[in-house]
Image 1: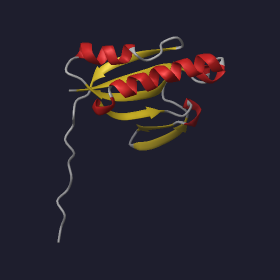
Image 2: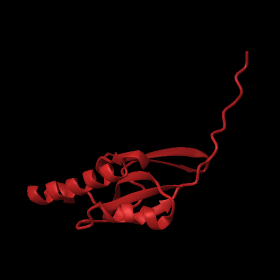
Image 3: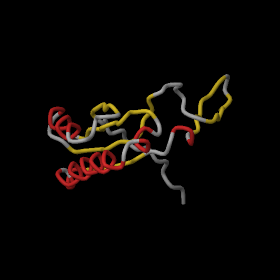
Length: 121
């Protein structure tokens, strides 16, 4: 089963850390990636939330606004998709990642079927 490891934290905190801490944290990411390399799917480090656009609807109209939907100090910073045999194994993968300045959520991924219209000739 696939699990998402969602990484939350405040924008810019990592960049403000001392370089030694940054190197240590990035090494933890590399160690996890090496251990699970044949079981990793998507990996993404997201740009700051100030670069986000939110798409919502109101009264049948689509509204596009600057910034993240949630007004929160903690934002989604990045994610991993990992193939694991159990939630416990996915949590073990998450434990390899740094938590000194962020938190993580581990969640099973449900595969939704892709619906495509049949091509017309």
